[in-house]
Length: 105
Image (cartoon, rainbow, N blue to C red):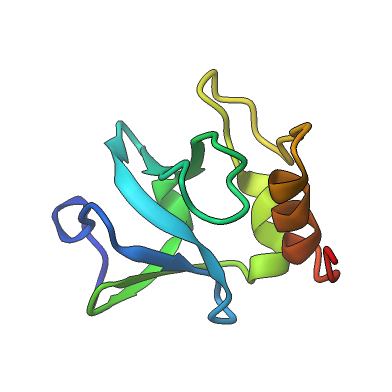
């Protein structure tokens, strides 16, 4: 399905171009997708992605234009900073490792 703002809904799974799990849609926030902070690896923090990264929607899955291992470079924080968002907690570091294609264990 060609993605439109109206086709993006809360609780949709967000995956990279390679199918790797990135997160879950919390809601749309202007021209950005706000991801839930309760996803494994979110570190209890929200992350945002630009709508321009949406390639396709398949059922309840939103597919991005970049693979999982490149998504962290596009994450935005509340203030709009783009790039890897560091966190002090181990769970969030684990997601960072997963996004870079490394085993966080």
